[in-house]
Structure formats: C-alpha cells, structure tokens
Length: 265
Image (tube, rainbow, N blue to C red):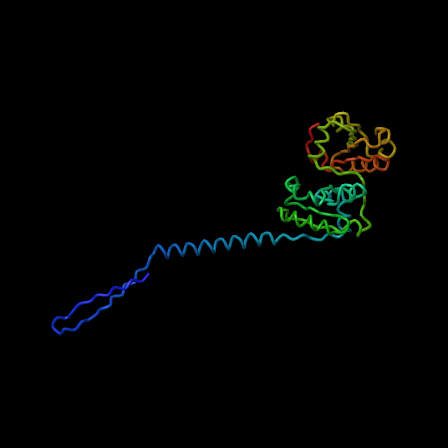
C-alpha cells in the first residue's frame, strides 16, 4: 500500500508557495507474509498431488503368457508365491479353471480387495476367458493398492492350461467350512500327522492310494460337499480332482495346507 502525503508550506520572504512531496512507502508485512504462505501452501499441495499421482502411475499391470502361468501352477513350490484369481462367474469357473485358481467374479473384486490384503505386496494373477475381464480386475486391484499384479492369457486363448473342476478355497473360507461341520473331509497327509490332529470326522488317505481307495471313503450322494486338505494343497488337489472325476459336483480343496495355516480343528 502506498500513501502519499503532501506537505505545503509558504516561504514568507519570497511569497512563493513551495509544495514539497514526501512520498512514504508503507509495506504491509502481514500482507506479504500472507501471500508468501499462500504460495508455499499452494506449492506444497501441488507437490503432494503430483507425488500421489506418480505413485499410482508407477504400478503397471504386467501381461503373463499362458505358458508361464502353466509352468508356475505345475511347480508345487513356485505356485505358493502366486495368488491366481479367476474372475469369471461361478458357473464358468466350475466348468473348468486353471489349477489352484480361486474364484472371485469381476463384479465382486472390489469388495473382496480387503479380504485379500495379505497379498498386496505379493504376486497376484488374474485370469478369465480372453484376458479382457481379467484386465479390468487387475486394474481394480492396482487401484486398491496391490503392487504386483499380472493379467494372464485367457483359458480360451491358451489351450494347454492344466484344467481342473474343483473349487479352491483360501484358508479363512476352508476354516469356515470346518466350523460349519458339514460334508465329508478327506485328509491327504501322512498317517502320523493325521493322528496328531485332524478335522473332526475327517478320513485319512495316502496320496499314493487315491485312485484305488478314495471312492470307498466318499458318500453315496454325488451332490454332497467334499473337502480335501493336506500340507500345502498339492496332494489334496489330486484327491479333489479324482472326486470330480468320480462324479461329485461340490468338491473343495484347501489352497493353504496345514504347514501354511494353523487351522482350528
């Protein structure tokens, strides 16, 4: 703010009026400080927004070839590092899906994101028929904070996937089945570990005897729920697939075995 004061005085001897201008520059420090702070705040907000945008943009969905995913799922140790999510609807999933893949339809992927929070920093793979729906699901997971997401080649595009027809359950879902105390449970661990503790009423079978002995352990009702489990989900997946081949329509395998999750029997 500039204030100009005019001082006028008269020189009595010469009768000349002299106007003297005194220009006073008054600077409002409060105003300057306010403007400075506003500028800093604006710059700070701009920087924060840019950083956030950069962080979101730094996570990209990777494309995974069917051959690569097939190799991972066939390796009993390597498959433990990946969570594979089939995002098709339940009926399509039951008709046949990639081995060890759990099922979360695309429409439900966002509400299940928190349910999968333990995998936010681990490898997650989405898959569907052609790669289109699974790409949408992958993008939603990245938006939800997942950092290592891959979109796999679809099951209709890659014909060499090992396809199975049982349902794979995560630990919390398998525990819920245990707590419900319904259905037939098949324990595919060694007898010594079975004897140390097992699901109430579970029947024990050696993985080597699945083909010849499993049928005798299953109920007559082909629609009755069948649950299989072992140490890591590998041995039990063989029992689960055999049950499907025997005509059972509701077969569930625990993806997390007893070495990976402490189930409450």
